[in-house]
Every structure is written in C-alpha cells, then in structure tokens.
Length: 266
Image (cartoon, rainbow, N blue to C red; front, side, top):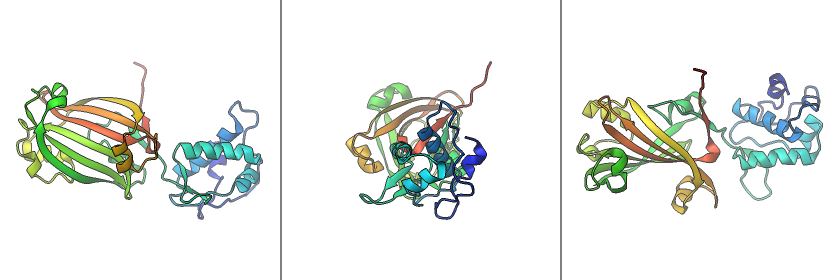
C-alpha cells in the first residue's frame, strides 16, 4: 500500500470516511496480511493528525467498504489497534474513539528526554511535582557511588500529556553535590536547577530499558488496566568531572511510547 493511498484513507472532518475512489488501495499480492495493511493505514492517519484525539472511528462496515475487505479483516485490525493503545471505548458497546498517537522517543537524547520529542510531535507534555524529600541512599547507593547512610534528595514527578498520565519519574540526587535541593522550586526542569543553582552540567549518561508488569500503585497513578505492561528506564547521569549527579527511575506507559534509535555502519 503506497503512502499516498494511506493519506487518503480518512478525511480530517471528525474522522469520517472520505471515499474518493472506493477500494483498491490494499496490495492483495503483498505477503503482509490485509488486516495489518488496514491497521497500518489507520495508524498512519492517527500519526498524521487526520484522525485526532477524541474522534470517532468509522464503523467496521464503513472501513470494510472503503478497502473492499470483510468485516472479519477489519475486526482483526481494530483489535490490534485497541491492544496497542491507539483506540478505546469510552463506554461499553460505545463507538471506538481515537487516543493520542504514541510518542516517538529518541533514546540518544540526554537533556529534556521526555519533553522535546513530545513537543515536536504536537503533544503537550508537563511535569506535575509530587514532592521532594531528603533520605538515605540505601538501595541507590551503588549507582550513585555513595555509602548507604549518605543522604540523597528524592524527587517524585508525574509526566502528563493534556492531563493524561504518561510516566512516573523518581530522581535521586546526592546531597553532597546539591545541598538543600529540596528547598528549591523543583516543579520545572531539574537540569536547569542544577545548572543555575549549583553550576553542574549533565554531560553523559548510561541507561537501561526493560519491560515488566505494572505494580498496583503504578496502575493507579498511570490509569492502567490490570496486568498492564510498563517500560522501566533506569538512568545514571554524570557531570563534567565524572561524578554521578542523578539516578533516575522512570516508569512509562508502554501504550504511549515508541522508542527510536538512529544506527550507522562504522
């Protein structure tokens, strides 16, 4: 299916079908199943903004007529879109409604990791400050190269996109390099606070990414269903002189993020 054909799938008018030429846009000779071609076409229009957040998806019959496929084929495509978090029902047996397109997150970004990519894709990401307190390093002492009894400032935040929760973030910052950090305004950029108040720049980081089942607390804060999967990110950031500045633990909704890496042949 060509990119041009995908762009013509839906009109921008409340997500209703625009049928300029009927079926014939699917490649029936392709090894890619027809249901996945329909899935890709609908997802393309979500990402391009032709199907917007809150729009109602056309009916199975309308989509089937548009592509000349059976309702069973359409139903398979829709089921995958629901599982991937692109569609939802606001009430039982109600119409399917478009959710926000996933955020393409570039893994190589050091600062503004959760904000810049989302802004560039038309999202409205904001941090909600949940609190900060000084505590012993304990289980975070190894990555921060501290003793268990050393003091760190723990900062808890919630990342939102138009009031929809996306991620839980917990930062641990050594007291020895940032004394009295919890007394400052931490509702904005922590990177900026470290630079402006302590003269510290984050210049390098190592992070790990894994997937796991969400805990009950995480499901509640992120608005997830039982047995939902989350992406678990752990990142250690260092200053110019190599000292650990921040150990970040982040729990992302797996249905709202896609990770992108740029690779090159050396």
